[in-house]
Image (cartoon, rainbow, N blue to C red; front, side, top):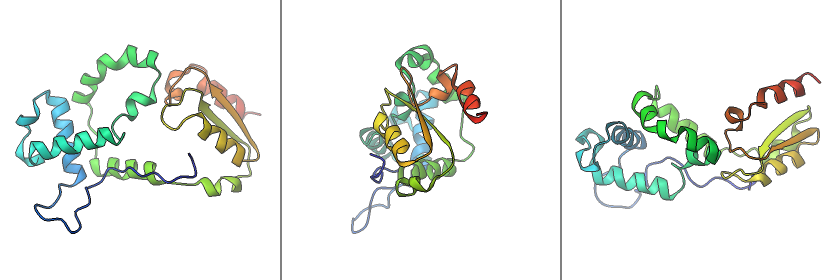
Length: 181
């Protein structure tokens, strides 16, 4: 639901009032996860600079259980995933964010930003493009946004995931046509 606040973030687990070692920061954990993904090594071979492998693996499992790490799978249609999933391992090995701190900041911003109460302040013509099969936020989010912005037009794609801008061949043309009206 748009008017709710996101509860999941890339963060260091709460340690207030707990005994033991201080928690590893999220950047170090994420770097360890990326190292495992790129190297293909077993968790037990994780270099010590990322912390104990059990800690990194535990946070990795927590992020999966919390739904934080499955967004890529939910962002694309099944057709797109079948075509490109085989390249994920290569992409993991050759691509690297320039700065993991920026990634963490952006991820947290995406998960915690809430402009729902300000949507009705938008007065200009607005094109809202959604997906009927949106498995991340659901189709109702697009409909809610359209309902809140009085001068909006809603277009819902049938068979695409959240990355409709990459998958739909007519996406750019549709946006340009809207802007030229």
